[in-house]
Structure formats: structure tokens, C-alpha cells
Amino acid sequence: MTEISISRALRSGILWSSVNAILSQASGFVIFLILARALPPELFGVVALSSVIADFLANEGRYAGMDAVIQAKGYDRKTLNSAFYGLLSVALPFAALLVAAAPLVADYQNAPLIRYFMPIFGLMLLATPWLSVMDALIMKDLGFKTFTQRNIVSTFAGGAAGIMLAFTPWAIWALVVQRVVSVLAVLLFEYRYTRWRPGFDADWHIARNILRRFLPLWSVAALSLSTQRAVVLIFGLRYDERTVGLFRAADRIGETMQGPLIGPLFSLWLPLMTKVRGDIAKEQEVYVAIIRTAAFVSLPAFTGLFVISDDIVALLLPHAYYGVAPIIRSVAIISLMIPIAWFNPIAMNALNLNRASLKYSIAVAVTCITVLLCLPKISPQAAIIWMSAPALVYGIAGNLFLHKRLKLAHLSVYRGLAPAAIGSAFMGLATWWTRSEILDWNIGFRLGLTILIGVIAYLGWLGTFHRQWTAERVKLLLGRS
View 1 (tube, rainbow, N blue to C red):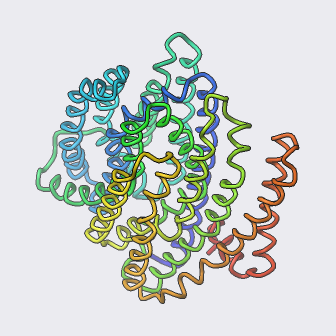
View 2 (view 1 turned 180 degrees about the vertical axis):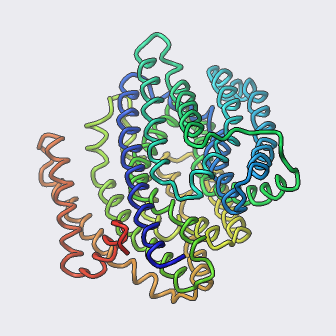
View 3 (view 1 turned 60 degrees about the vertical axis):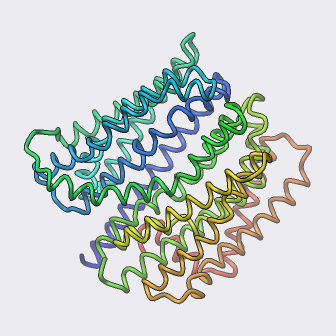
């Protein structure tokens, strides 16, 4: 791939992934706030418990299926049909298990609604293989723009359906209907774009090859988020549905920030590394650029979130969600590990180190979940931090492994993160002092001024002491690196 085409792919990927993340997350967050006004946190907790297992295939499995098809580089009808049936062989037993297990889980959790919600989420999994194949057809040409349009359509369609039900006597179904309508909207949109549907011309040998690629990719993606999902399950057992609902509300606020900031960078790994694989200089450039840019955008954002969490909750959420702010602070603390710990599995996959990525993800997930299970009954916010502590150690170990593979000097890579870390610390002190001085102000004015001071402090520090480093990060975000 030529230099100009790589630059064009980077520019397109950054632009449309950013638009996708910003619009989808912003509209999704507004929809969440409206629903939170009508629905109690306990209902969010029940839906989270009902869907947590299904999401391993509905989310991570779907994109792992897409990546498996892309890696196979076969887009003829027989290969796509084979991929569909291979993925369906995973989705069918998964869906049947969830339908059968629903009554048992409902009785165990003493939550009758799970008996009705979980089978619906299980049956929705049958759409996953078709979506994976259509996703691959779109992304083979780096169709970030199409993904953006699809996500916006599905977000608004599902949100509108959920909001309409939330203010009726059938409000308990609002969150479930929201998700069902979103999936149907994606199916219709992608079929209209690709015009692809499964046929009978398939080959089991091809399907098996796709599955050999899919299973490690899915395992790595699922394991990367298994700790977060384990929190939902273990909180449901150790605390109650309300605590799970508060955690989901805090996590939703964190995701609203992570999506626009980190989502575009995540989406670049596999397509760009696939294009430059084998050229060590280009691989180094992609790795270093993404990691440094992740630090540039994530460290100040989550430092600021830690400081202003109380004001965000007081301003945006009803009184029933009192108790979310301490959990948000814990989410912000563990999100500071993003540049070091969060990219390792996907970077390994992008470098075709699927086995290493799988082993790494298993080690992280098993250790963090074990810590969570062994903790005494402490506060939810403390449990989140203690559970995530081992991930930092694994993150550094994963960094060292990747640096060795890419022939990068460890100290040089970490030194490249220092400007963002120092600037964020300075910004955190400035915003904390500002907020403490104006505690008697109106919440909205206080929040706005604190954010403004934070932006000025961070960019002012970087512009004064790290001007060239900052210019490089801005160029990448604009797709001009």
C-alpha cells in the first residue's frame, strides 16, 4: 500500500470513526438520561443481568466474526455462506442455552423479569452471524462512513422506541424493546447496503477455517471485557439489582467519554496493521502514534471526570441515582490505565499474534475476576479499584512483549506518554482548586467553569512545554500524520 493511500485510509478512519463515536455516544447518552428519568436503577440492573452473557456473542462475537472474514480475505459467495453457517453453529447453541437457563437464573437472583428478558436476548443472537458477514463486506473497503450512518440510525431508532414505552404502563419493557429495535434497524440498513443474504452454496472446510480464526479473536475480545461483565454478575450476587443499576449508570457515563475518545483509535488497529504488516518501520509508527494519541485524549478526560463526578451526577441524574458519583470516580481511576493496559490484546491481534493475545487476555481476566471473588464485602467503588489493580501489572508486561516484537526501546515509548501524564496532573490540580473555591456557585456554572479551566490548563501546559509533541497528536487526530 502506498504512502498516500495509507494516509488517506488513516484520515478517513479517524474522521468517520470520530463522527461515529461522538454522535452515537452523545445521542445514546441523551437517550439514557431520558430513560433514567422514567425508569428506576433496579430495572437497568435487571436488564444488565439478563443480557450480560448474551453480550459476549452479540457484541464481541459479532466483530470477531467480521475480523475473521476480513483476515480470510475471501468475499466470494461460497466463502461468505460458509462463514455464515460456521458462525451460526456457535450462535444456535448459545441462544438455546440462554433460553433454557432463564428460569433458573431468575429464581437464583430472585428477579422474575429475567425469566422473560433473557430468552429475548438469547434469540437476538441468531442475527449475529448475518451481521458479521455484512460488517465484513462493508469494512473490507474501510467503510467507516457506512458504519457511522448505520450506528446513528440504529441508536435513534432504538432510543425512540425505548423512550415511547418508558412513559407508558409497559415501561418495564422499554430497555428490551430499545435493543430489539436497534438490532432490527442494523439488519435492515446493512442488507440495503450490501444486498447480501445467506444461500446454500457453502463448504464446511471453509467454515472450519473461518471458525479457527473466529474463536481466538472472539475469546480475546470477550476476555478483554470479561472483567467488566463479571462485575455485573458478582455485584448481582453480592449486592442487589440497584447496585448493578448504579454501576451500569456509572459505566454508561464512562463509556460516553471512552467512545468518542478511544473508539476511533481502537477501530484503526486491525485495518491499518493489516495494510502495513511486514514493514517494521510502519508497524512501529502505527503503534507509537496510536498509543501516544490515546494518552493525549484519555488522561485529561478521566482526570477531569474524577474531579467533577459529583457535579455531573447532581446535574444530570434524578435523586434515585444517588450513589453513582463514587462509582464514577473508580471508573475514572481505572480508565487512566488506557494507554498502558487497554490496547495490548488488540495490538497483538493486529500483529497476527492471536495466540499470544489469547493467553494474555486469559491471564488478565482470570486474575482480576479471582481478586474480585476473593475480596471481602467492601464498597462497590473500592471493589472496582482492587479488582483492576492486577491489570496494570499485566499491562506493563504486555507492553514489554509488544515493544520487543516491534523492536522499540521501552523507555522511549513510556517517555512519549509523559507529556500527557504531566499535563493531566497539572490540569487535575487546577480543576480541583477551582472547584473547591466556588462550591457555593450554581452547579451548572460551577461545572462549566471547572471544565473550561481544565481545558485551558491542559492545552496551555502542552502548548508551552510540549508543542511539537502536541502538534503530532493533533495531526493524527485530523488524519494528517
